[in-house]
Image (cartoon, rainbow, N blue to C red):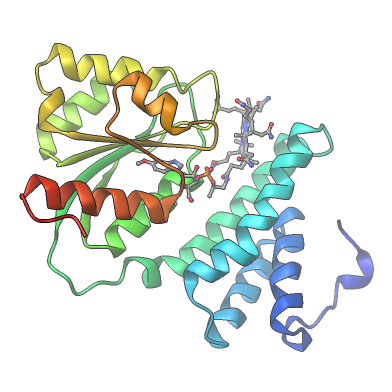
Length: 234
Ligand code: B1M
């Protein structure tokens, strides 16, 4: 997607749709500064952070994923794209997490053992914070003992697990079995997410729900918290 003639492109000269598309292209090319500048311009133009995620950043990341799968991009290029995505998320972070609301619950979240993908999990963490949850983010490659220790220490209402690989998603079941063995499975709401998962998988491993994206994670967490406090679910 790189094009040298675009080196001096004035992002401000683009209309909104062109700019959103350009941000996707720049993300693909791992051009962190340009991606950040584009995101800032869209914010100045009144775009909502979620719209920027859904209409500019995620489409770019999807093309990265497809070309990675097809052997057109390799790990170094994908890492550059991931870094650009992370820089954009840092710009959006204050907007996504800003909330004056009192804390409505606590979540411990991590990417499971063997898996180092963290962009989606961090997005979920940010949006949960924005929705008024206290979030303890354990990072990547988290094993069952680390999840158990964090649950013991922080006493969360919700455990969130992320997996992006078909080879690591079964580990979620290992964690749930560990909760069972410790006799605390029923004390905690287990939400799982990540691109290769689906609702059937979540049910099969004994999770409470599958969340297809960060917005659904927030909605689902809210609903479970209402049930926990015996409030009607709207
Ligand atoms: Co990897 N990778 N990767 N990768 N990578 C995928 C996942 C892949 C689908 C690419 C492909 O082939 N098309 C493929 C997996 C295939 C499979 O298993 N079926 C793959 C592979 C194969 C690999 C390696 C094995 C490659 C290799 O080394 N040969 C390797 C594995 C490393 C490891 O983990 N052990 C690897 C490495 C990497 C990088 C390090 C280069 C980099 C990660 C950088 C980072 O995260 N810091 C990377 C990336 C960036 C990707 C893609 C391109 C993008 C993932 C991403 O960030 N998406 C990805 C392709 C793709 O998914 N299209 C791919 C954006 C993010 C916002 O979306 O993570 O889906 P996502 O999160 C969403 C939802 O899923 C949900 O909400 C989020 C926000 O809406 N969600 C949750 C996620 N977690 C949740 C938790 C919840 C709730 C919702 O808890 C309640």
